Length: 427
Image (cartoon, rainbow, N blue to C red):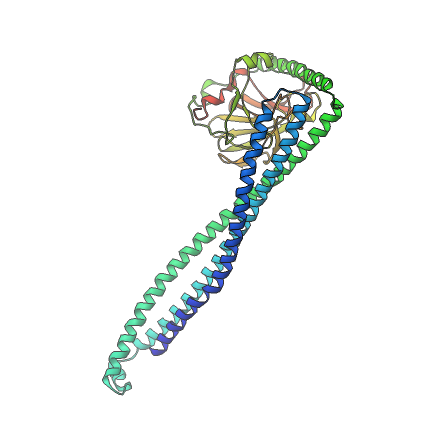
């Protein structure tokens, strides 16, 4: 019994002193996390300034000089965005290190608890095998019996405490493991985003070089190029509208009735620059007089989120064929409620066909800067969001088109295009 008490006292000493070393390591990691957080705050403040500059440039007329300035400002902001993502990767890595230390500490504590409990149980078992007569004959006087009995009671109390502590530590271990797994998933997501952002930076730089080459840095040449693009887009859009009008429409019951918040916003900041259907802008820009989606004004490189959980049905880039002025780089997502969405004019994508995505997951980055790869037909940076009745949309190689024979795009009867704003949250 006295030996059992000594084991528990020794255990208490070990568990009190050892975590101090681990705690010192955890403090060092936390200090690094705090430093990175301060850096992140500075980068976010700089991001706001750069965003304001981009917003101001976006209000300027469409000129070669304005376009070049926008591309330069966009690249500067994108490089800052890269730093923010790298900062997040570093912070997440440190969080994982901290959780790994906690897990190691939990596992050591669990082992010590189990060892102490085992030793105590053995001592108690040995004591229980003694008879009262044996105990009386063992001690020199009767008072030692009462003292040892009190020690036994103390051992039993501490044994119960160790069992409770073991459960708490086991629960903490499970929680830390779950947190570490979540952080690892976050780290993987950030690394994917970093890869996409690097592509956007490269794309933006290439767009500037191409624009200067095509126009020979002359405003007149730029305006002529812009006019040609508009004319070619109108011709393509007229052909597409005529072709789609001849397609069979899906049943009206194939999709849910319009209701706000069935879908979520694709961007964190919402600025609608063109609505769905017949508008003054659609009449001016489209031969059919209608716009088959909603345009959101946003700088190049803005994260684009899935508006609802679903599966990546298809993706493509109409810019792969010169002169095909359409969606540019696009992603089609099929949802579980009879609806499908298309995200157009993207500067980069982060997903693969067949991949499952969740609501709010970043699937790509916005584009639309004229002349940039993936911009398609666009007069300025924006995201095009289209909404289809899933039963009515197919992805086809539009072989009868004059300008887009070698690319695939989603095709649907005009009645199977729905107004996204009727399903998104209220403005």
